[in-house]
Image (cartoon, rainbow over the protein chains, first blue to last red):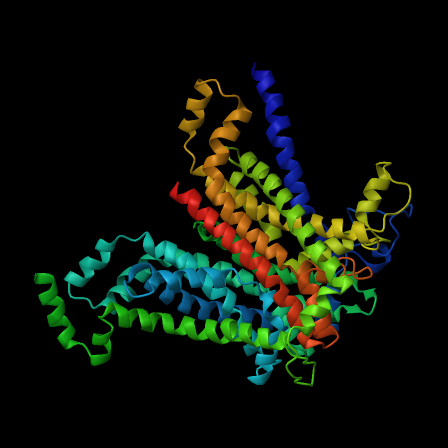
Length: 283
Length: 309
């Protein structure tokens, strides 16, 4: 009976789970191997006799060196970092205030505004990028980081607001009433009592907003043009492919290094990230 | 009574501006203003601009003039647009079914106690966290016609004798893109559905088991209905994101070979930004709107129904 249970556990749980993990992580392994593989090995056809796909005996950092010496990669990293941080802060500021208002205050049209926020939450960037490019140009923001810093909040604020509404609704009304009885104004009760209680929610929203900004592509592709203004995803796409020639080594090195900041932030706040992700799908 | 007396005394000490914020309506207005300005300026205004643009003959460097529905008429008769539309529905439908099925399976695999569970959960979310463009390049490299590791593996296993040109053949290219989208989306489904599964009390399963329900029946009659509300929201987000997808196709094929793998967004980009036909690009982008609108309305109605039942 116990023997039977053991093989069942392997067949129905462990083996499928191992396969899932393998498939989900393999592309990252492939990224890492390619980054450290010399060009001579990289461009061996797949049916060559000495093709050894999963390992290299001659690791090299030539691709990483190329990335930093021949391209503006370091600059792209700084640009992306700056844009992601500032747009996250703006979105948190707006989202926390709006979430508080929609979750805890009584005012006319509160329900309608809540629905409107939910609808904008669902507007994809690809719906508006062409008219937005015109507007960015008319505002003279084209090819500056501000083109992205001001437009990323359009998809981050609805998300932060939605998530924060959930957190604020879960805080008991009595907490605020106690502060008010002790003489705090509404504003003070919000800033000193309620918002500090909602800090886990703010962290979750902030981390997800940061990863979303780092991931954004089409606005960055359309609104920025000079090589030194680009973000990592756009820079890698446009500067490491010349015509039909792909510089696979530096490309994979760029993909690997460009993922690291997000991976670091994620690894420190996994629990907050997961809480935010699951909170964001609660109606 | 004492409460109002105290806060009235307090509010007398406040500056006039802060006193105004004691009124819930003024406070709400103040708190919502920054959001309203940003969303109005960069969502509502571009939306109207987009509608106007799609009704004009604008190109890059030429503001154009009003031409009515001419652009929509033109794309309606455009065979590439027909392919684009078909592709978008196929892509959205197939990936959503697979992401839901595989995501649910993975969630069930994770919904028990085993050593290293937290670590596994953290790692499987990576495809969703890592910037899509960057991870898609890894896939493109794995699908490379000459250096493909997938071809190598299939060859070594004796399954193929000649190379497969994954991204060069129209049907295979679409399938390859679908595979990558599923790969990227499964973690999101798995983690959110796992959170849903964890809210289902194990006692319900025990009760059903005592009543003689088999595992499959328990899943179908206990787990699935209770998971429905979360499932619907997850599917709603996923369908909209997939329908409006851009990055994946842009990197994998750029809409090729021979315009066979375009989605709305990539075709709009190619016409609007690539060729500079702003008005036609805007029209193609806006053509997504009715579909998105219907998806949102149907799902919102359905979600409300499930929740009030």
